[in-house]
Amino acid sequence: MPGSRTGRPPVQRAVRRPAASRSRRDNPLRRLCTRAQRAWDRPLTAYYLILGGSLLIIVLGLVMVYSASQITALQMSLPGSFFFRKQFLAACIGGVLLLVASRMPVKLHRALAYPILAGAVFMMALVQVPGIGMSVNGNQNWISLGGSFQIQPSEFGKLALVLWGADLMARKQEKRLLTQWKHMLVPLVPVSFLLLGLIMLGGDMGTAIILTAILFGLLWLAGAPTRLFAGVLSIAGVLGVILIKTSPNRMARLACIGATEPKTGVADCWQAVHGIYALASGGLFGSGLGASVEKWGQLPEAHTDFIFAVTGEELGLAGTLSVLALFAALGYAGIRVAGCTEDPFVRYAAGGVTTWITAQAVINIGAVLGLLPIAGVPLPLFSYGGSALLPTMFAIGLLIAFARDEPAARAALAMRQPRFGRKRGAGGPRGPRRWNTMRRRASVARSSGER
Image 1 (tube, rainbow, N blue to C red):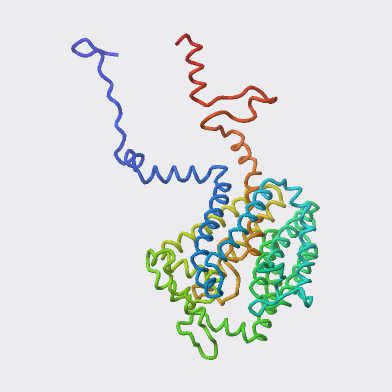
Image 2 (cartoon, one colour):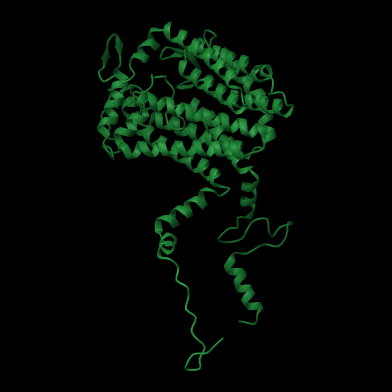
């Protein structure tokens, strides 16, 4: 290489990159999006979304149940925390069920499918026995357990249909029988119609809609042809129209969609209209926790079916959007678990649970917003009601177990190291204990001669 006039080799200047490429690389928004994408694609993302999202919904629901039920309890000459204590007890029992379900192997879940289905059918039949079943708000769907405790067996029918339907479709897929339409429909559709018939004997149209949604979800996951899917949907639609037309109460609820006055013709839309009033008076950040006006007797079922309206009044648009975001994250995580697994039972069960929770949340929130008829279904994990909370928390435990059972998630959980202290199991019969990172670095430094 020829030298310069001073005898020194010429200085090689670095090639300057275009300013556009440097700006794209140094853009903070782009770096943030890249980091978010990497975090979103991690194997344990679905696990953390299901666990964290469901716990946040439950905790926020307990707070809102306590706030929304105080006035109702006092009007019934009960302590102000009466409904909150019952819901907290149900949440504790549900927490045990969630933990048990999240630790159970898939084989045990499949083994429990038939016993849970048989128990649900038996309890739903007991509801119609005089002296055992009891009516609440015109629906004969409850069994008294003594005192103020009641149980609604139809809520456990949702869990039974998910587990049994997932096990049935998985076994048929393993035998390659789902290519025939009769194996896809029988016995799934007849058993579903049996559950729907037992529910409709008590007049609970809302729970019947949720069970129908679960049935369609299982058929869709099984790859039902469009003609078959449309045929079952048409039959369900005709039956729904007949049931609505033959009931003045259901016709009145249908007439209250979009109502802005308590009286809409012959229909009494008091509950629907005051739910809109509660949401409208909340504003951006609400009137404050416990400061709702509509719960003072104006809004019926403020702590059950219309707790979302009280949430909008006290926490405002920010609170309602937070609840919607938590349900959206839970639904996304469930879809991700169902889409990433290779086990057919896990796919059907995860899809069924996700369909159940998402459909029920949409129906409840749509009714509060005046976009759907009032179906009388609670907001899952949020509204007051132990009968709805217990099977839902067990279903969340199913999703957690499935999310942990993914091969990538299992590998990520196995590679996790504690940040402080020792890792249990490394010093017993399995091998020597491993210390934290700082202790290992210190041992390396001493072995090199440094003291």
